[in-house]
Image (cartoon, rainbow, N blue to C red):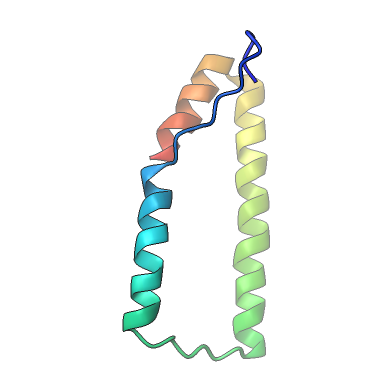
Length: 81
């Protein structure tokens, strides 16, 4: 809700619409890839996913503590695209 009390529905992001359109086409026209779920592969996924996410959130938190709010906001907005 905004300060005036009216509730507005956000416009859908074009990337969401593209995903909704292209995912069924891709699934219908190509076979699913075969994934070898070996223990080393699972460990690599965990190693890359968990610390990578934690380090990214920590870096943003540390940067936002030392930068003005406008600079942090514009920096995060720029990384969105």
